Length: 392
Image 1 (cartoon, rainbow, N blue to C red):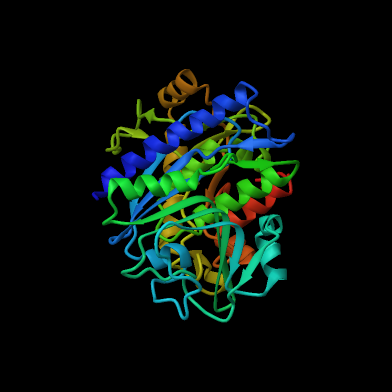
Image 2: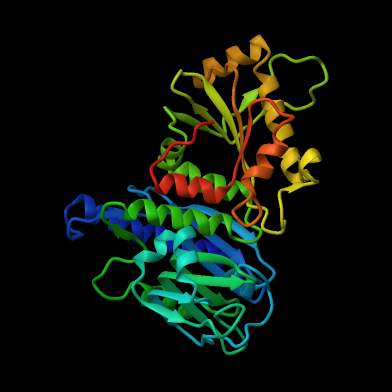
């Protein structure tokens, strides 16, 4: 089966299924026992060579249509391991056909205290399979592996005292040689019974924990593009409003250069986020990745502390966005098109994670800048879960 056909079939099936769930909810035909129902908003489709993966991501109160994001991944084992592509030693499970796991945590470590501190949503999983005696991907895909589905699961990976968790609402894996009939069987098995699938039912603070868990899975996803992380945050505006005390925000506003000094070659600027402060003016935000391949996002000794090139490029981009608003015609265009007004803007770059970000080193590297702030993704998640605001 061609990858594009696999994607189209999955998109059609899950859009139809989730639309039916949403309709049943609106018509009172869905018993949630007083819980809030949350729907996925993104379908992440990955071509791993011999295997195709479809994963539903997100936790929003409404459902319209899945936003499809396609990507390529050189190794299905790295997809689930999050660290490396090597063979699992030993594997916890070798899939065959139409295998499934549901409502379980599969952990490559026993260090629960450190895990719960960084990934508090793990408290929502009462069943844990301890596979800490092995390393690498918990699954091994080989010639006999045809299909596998995971629902309401989390995979905890560990390497050299580093931890990464993959929170899964629903994930389906199929060998590229699967035919339409067997693919149909895989989908039908995934929705069997009278229980609604591919959704969350939550109460109280569980919603924040699940959203944060999904977001952590996104930025700890090897090779995931910035645009996909941005789309997730855009679909969960409560994250921005809570963390940054935002009055409102604009996602990826397209602002044409109406005036400049003659050296600009771009047609427009397209910042990731423009976030309105309490005084009505907007700050400028850019979303990078967690830079998982980098051990540190800073370099040099204290007196010469500076950022690595990936971060420096992000700061330079933010400075370019700030310059845009220095010209009267550009400022008027932004106000007319989006209602955006800028005055002494803070420039905020979201990049890195707890693994490669040291708060003191970041403060030292920011000394040479004016109103530039760096926040890592783990801090963003913790602030969201704690319902705190970030003073920038």
